[in-house]
Length: 171
Image 1: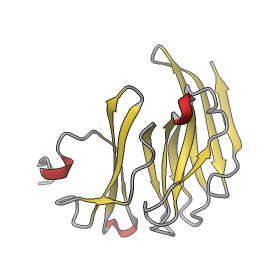
Image 2: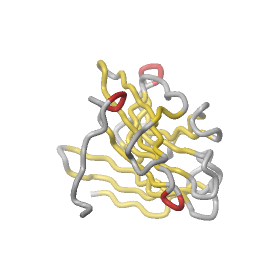
Image 3: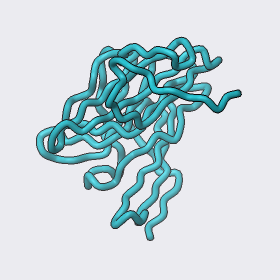
């Protein structure tokens, strides 16, 4: 009846999943787990299901352990193109970034997101253009005491290398 669900045992147990994306045709899905393991240390993994979520396999390699993964994007025109947005803590500085993979998660390239230099403004995936794997949107959000004090909508048309602000609002 569509109202029944269950938890998948095995490698997925005790993981915190923050995003899932169905791929075109809903033949497969990719999920993002992001778990804190120590102060400013995270275990971020991608998982793939080809059977409507009945089973999941680990996908690719993980970003650096000081990266907190927040959201996921899968390019509809190129299933090898994956994006993970989040906060990077490399070398003690925090910054809003996107990690991009062109080989389905085997390798990752880090791109800073405009406005995320303060480490408090974090990027969340808005969506990947359905016709262009290089074009995607992120919402840059900064919160203070659970209140949104800044919101910016950004677009990149070159896979994360450069950014354009489409809309922004300060409290």
